[in-house]
Amino acid sequence: MNEIYECLIIGAGIAGLQAAIQLGRYKRNVLVIDSGEGRSSLCRSYRNILGWPDGISGEELRALGKTQAEKTGVHFLSGRVVGLKKGENAFEAETASGAVYYAKRILLSTGLSDRMPELPGLKACLGLSVYVCPDCDGYEVRDKKTIVLGAGAAGANMALTLSYWTDSIVYVNHEQQSIPEDLILKLTHKGIMTVDKKADEVLTENKSVFKGIRFADGTLLEGDRGFLAFGGNTVHTGLAAMLGAERLENKHVLTNPRTKETSVKYVWAAGDAGVHSEQVTIAMGEGCQAAVWIHKSLMDGE
Image (cartoon, rainbow, N blue to C red; front, side, top):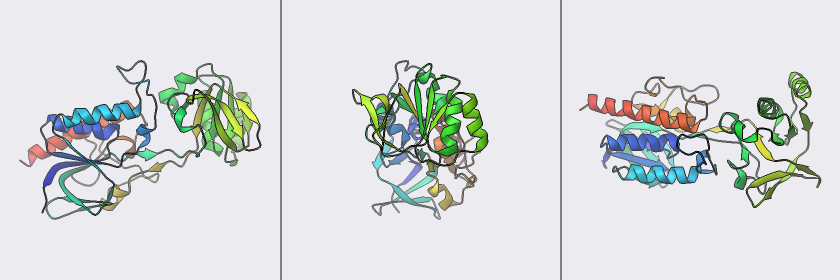
């Protein structure tokens, strides 16, 4: 058998990196396998993190975290884990290349992907002038003309949520899904206009400053900030299912609130893959929390 790592972390997003740093500081033999994707890699600026008042991009935060973990001896591998099972002496993780890696403990920090349209100009604005999380970035649209681009009830609810921050909101029902009557009444009460039209392009200034929407019919809608709300995000917990870990109907993994261990012994989950509130700072906390208990479990076996 090849080398058996003390812990394999699958996913080098914010939760996975924070766990790697903590486990590295415990002098544990850790391998992190990451595909290089993840929602944090798309965000151009997080502004609600302690110590970064002017914001930091997800890409930079991940790069800093990787360097910090490597300094403690943590190993990183670029790849995608496609198979995971419990072997006789260790967990066995198979990558898309066919290589197999072994570990005594597993941390799943595989996250989720936001469902959003492929529109010209959109991705360059993410985290700078177009947002997905009102708890993270509702503050950024205060008193700004805000366009919510979404689908059906998900977009309607986002528009209503943002009415706490601004009274100038237009909801573009991009997919023209039906909106429940009670939500229509609430939108009307808040003075939120709904446009049932398909967007064709995000208008920008200097590539990353949101200026509005161009519709498929050529008409324009100007705005200062954008928000996305399409619902149906993809939760990447297929590996947890392979091991038999308990999941909710929405595919998020259930964990022990104290330890972040899943229903499968020696398998942990942290960040957006678990039951969460989609916050970078919470992902950091959960990664560290899981690492502490992974270390404790390894000590018990030594």
